[in-house]
Image (cartoon, rainbow over all chains, first blue to last red):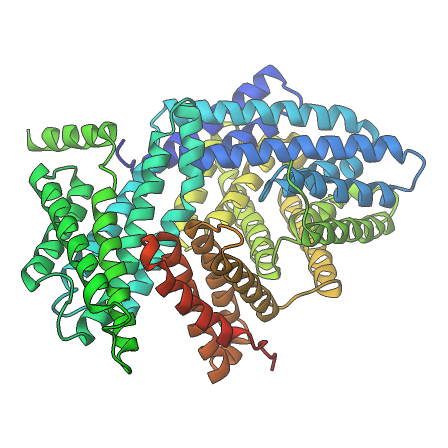
Amino acid sequence: MKRRPRAALTLRNGALLAFVVATCHFLSLPEGVFLALGVLTVLESDLGGGVIAGRERFTGTLMGLVAVVISSGALTAAPQAIQVCAGLTLARIFGFAAGLTSGYIVGGQVVAGSLLHHSSNWWYYAFWRTITTLLGVMLGIVISRQIYSERAISQWQEKCNSWLMELAQALSKLNTSPDGPQVFQNLRTFRNELRQGLPELAAEQSVLDAHENRTLLWAQQILQQGSTVMSCCRDLAPLLNSSPKNPFISEQIMDALISCGCTRLKGLTTGDESAQNLEALHQIQGMLQVGVRRHLNEDLSPKNVMAGMEMQSKMDLLMASRLILLVEALINAPHPLPNLWGQKHLADRVKSW
Amino acid sequence: MKQLSADQIRNALQVGFAGFVATAVFQALGPNPNQVDGFYILYGVARSLLPTAEASLAAARARVVGTVFGGVVVALLTLVLSNWLAVGIGYVLIQLGGRRLGLNQATLMNACITAILLLAVPEFSALDGWYVFDRAGWHLVGLLIGMAIERLFWFRPALQRLQDSEKRLCTLMLTATSGKESIGAENLIGLYAQHCKIRSTVLQSHQAGTLQLPGFVERDELLEQALQHAVAMQRAPKDLRHIDQEACEEALANLSEPLRSP
């Protein structure tokens, strides 16, 4: 699914909001404005973000309704200030218990609207507000899914590809002129931003295909393996620079590892990767394991480590650990999802026509 | 259903008390405070007291600026058009104009809400500009009440939150190195990302200088080292895990001295 131009989405939302408001007027729907606000909440973001925002809004409204019913029912004779105090406290408690991250604000607004603005007919107001919010959120999700849909996965994948390309660049410099800590800090910030997008992918998946969570699993795995590549490069950079000679694999194999690793990372962004490249990484992994085992058994056995050399042996072990992890992560990084890349290839082909 | 934390219970009580104060102000306005949209004072309270004081301030700013911006756009638009079509056109104008002015998403959302309410609710349309004035003003009063209560009870500055977060991370890493409990690498990464967020909040506050002091810089580096090894320990091959375990324990031992506030 390609990313949509922002202006076109703005026009879509504007037209739909006008239509929704007109329909509510035409039908004389009680508290119809909350239907429009429910639609707006969902449409303001991509599908995944909209689903989360819609859930928060509806659940918050429902929690607010429950809080109003309890505080009004239990404290009928109490002064209005006490009722409001109890209502707002309960709305927050219910919101937190339901795991809301922002919907409790709407819950508080339901309490405010019911107990201060519509205190004489709060049940009518709170009930219809809840119903119209539910309708609005549902309508928003249907529109966001069916009409000129913008998917969270498109944006996420674009970002993820940039991250993988930067990782490939960092890996390519590992043996010659490794990047400084700032580059890895930036890569980590980038990774954290991608991690923050995972709930939106999960929410999007839940309305697109509730039985499949392939997209989310793929995203989690690519982040996990990419993170390992990133931290290994960060740790290996100073170790390879300070150590006169890599004790586990020859210079040529190290170069091959970097080259195949870069090809693999780039392949993950385009979906094109030869089977030979992966095979070569498997072979390098085998050679590395043999090298590490030999080094552990012979050179680093306690009787061979001379006094004062413990530090060097620790460095060697750390290098071994990171090299093994690096190759493993490169091999285990998942291929792009076929459905996503099928569409990209189709788009590329259309462009070439 | 999730179990509530002590912070969440405190927050709920604070909101309740702020609501109590706001309702008292509302009642003091006279026999019919809703004539001047006084109920919006409680909407302001409901929008304040977010998980951090910085988030509350940002939300307050977005609400007030958004309300005024949306009101101005609708006021200009209604000179030409005031039927349901105006809702769509108003939305587009707010989005395009607001983005050009550099307004953030939350502010634009608030502006759109104001536009919809002004154009779709006849009761509010009848008030014209006064609706925007009343709504923004009473929201501001409610938000200020909320933020005052936030400062008065259980207030924790960003630096203190950073120290608490550091303590939590250290405890978790100690548990991980001792092997008592398995703590996933992804969990540690997530918690450290939150820690870094709090750190950047401190760096934007008046306490930023404290973090530049040598003791604090050193602690920060030690925490970073400990975390790097704790994460690697979860991923490393079994027979090489002890290297990261030892390095993590060493960094944590150096961190064990409590961080002193200035």
